[in-house]
Image 1 (cartoon, one colour):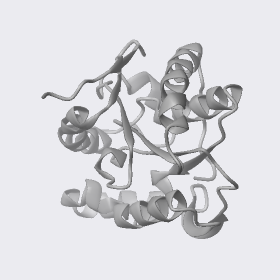
Image 2 (cartoon, one colour):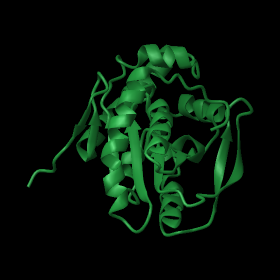
Image 3 (cartoon, helix red, strand yellow):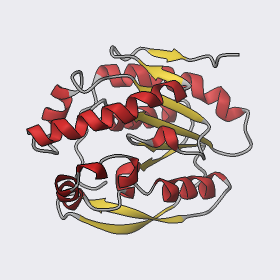
Image 4 (tube, helix red, strand yellow):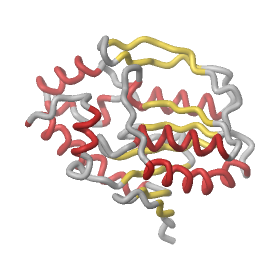
Length: 217
């Protein structure tokens, strides 16, 4: 999404390096790109961790391509906010064309040279289009609140930070007015997204430690 601000800090870099070290062997064992989803609540640091992970992977001679869920919203940001305020039931995964993001990830993982994807221009409140070319990327990274729900994903990373813990980051990012309505939206998102924790392969804890989750046998 054009117009987004990133505040990458040392804890993002440290977690990203740990993830890069653990993901590289998984990519090396595959004939096709590894698809990784990074999910979590608003302000949890998804975009920052994703950018830091791309840098860390580069240091391991692994190339990556980032695809942001925010570009796949049905409506551009300000219009979406008006839609939410007129109908609070609109808040949730239905706001996002996850099916299209899933399709694009599947195409790229199967070797497509390019996909034409939506591109959100935040300040202009519009959705355009861009051609995305993987150029031999080893790892595809899908970043966004609901990306744990994607089917075309090999590894799911979940940032386990709550609405209260992310308040400072949301204020610093200054993308949305911090009003009572936003708190309602975040509470609804929390109820949905917190259940995705159990889908994760890797958990980023509140202090940004990385835990690998072992599925129950």
